[in-house]
Amino acid sequence: MTPDEFRAAAHRAVDWMADYFETVADRPVRAQVRPGDILAQLPDHPPQAAEPIDALFADLDRIILPGMTHWQHPSFFAYFPANSSPPSVIAEMLTAALGAQCMSWQTSPAATELEQQVMIWLRTMLGLPDGFEGVIQDTASTATLCALLSAREKATGYRANVDGLSNQAALTVYCSRECHSSIEKDVMVAGIGRENLRKIAVDESFAMQPEDLEQAIRDDRAAGKTPAAVVAAIGTTGSSAIDPLPAIAKICDRHGLWLHVDAAWAGSALILPEHRYMIEGIERADSFVFNPHKWLFTNFDCSAYFIRDPDTLLRTLSILPEYLKTREGEAVRNYRDWGVQLGRRFRALKLWFVIRSFGVAGLQERLRQHIDMAQRLARDVEASDDFELMAPVPLALLCFRYRPAEMSDETQIDALNEQLLESVNDTGATYLTHTRLNGRFVIRFSIGQTMTEWPHVEDAWRLLQRSARELGAQLAS
Ligand SMILES: *Cc1c(COP(=O)(O)O)cnc(C)c1O
Image (cartoon, rainbow, N blue to C red):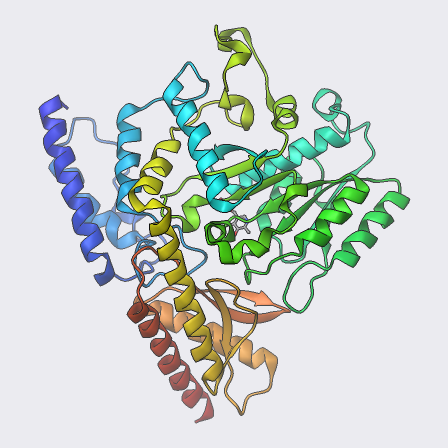
């Protein structure tokens, strides 16, 4: 591709993107294809000869788009959002054009120093303590792995990295029963072992019970284990429960445990002062993660990891072979030592574009709108005769279910809601997902896509009600 050909094709790509944003609301939210449908349209062999860009654009529209689930659709209410925005997309294109590998300061000083500064901006925006230092990771899963590795090294006097874990007393890690699956995976990857992850009971709001945490730590100590870390969730994935940080912090203090705070989704809401109550006690935390790629208009992937004492992280992860040594040595920040991977993308650029384009006030306004819509929907659900909320709604995630008055068999209610969810998603008009709370099937309605407005929420809610009553009528007849 010549520079002129690139210019023409890239302009065309930008037009494609602008058209996509303008028309995405007309597409089915969840892809309406069957397994294998896309694969069947892809040739068995790569082309031997060069193909024109026209052919690629044509197949993008013909083959790929129908097989996409549209996360940037304003009626996307599944999982948690992965909301993007035009400034973020622009910066991501620029990052690709620069094509820099930002592993150390020298390999792109601006990438390192911009990352330092935008992480300070984020720290201020969220109201995190001044001492916390930030680094961008790909995902919260990776950030939590870094936290657990640091905790592991601290608990073993930095011996696990040298000798492995076979000579160590078993380490134990604690989180609530509602914690994200990534905690369990990270415990496995860190060599701590799934059997050594203690899932602590939760209260009626699905938040961790600190007395049970205290007891579990004592029991493990008595059994000769080495309690190493607690992962507290600010906004669990199931129902956005908020673990009681002050009580958990006190317990970590008393027992000398690493305290990692997983605020992957809810962390964005901390830019709103009225929600800072969620991190009361954060000064005692050792690390904190949240994902701007979930609810802060920065396209996937971008996870912000903050640590109180970066030395622990550096002692855990830095390695300096000859070929990576640079003249600046210790005088500069080399982010390759702040995570698992060596090579790093220039992710700070999109955060910089997003924060500057929206302004903090613009970001706050949009988040408040999402939360207001969720609170309004929560009132409508509560007011309805045959739907019920199944968990508190502190932010912008609702968990509820359909429950016709005449139905009392829990298994039957579960099956009905499962059917309801499928029938709604099959229309393509909206996309919702589910979880189980106390064993019961509940529908999750998560509001946070960049373009979502109240009519999108209301349409989805009406569709749910209509479909529910149709299903209910079928059952009754
Ligand atoms: C989404 C989520 C994660 C995992 O995030 P990734 O960035 O996909 O690894 C972890 N914890 C919580 C609470 C989440 O909601």
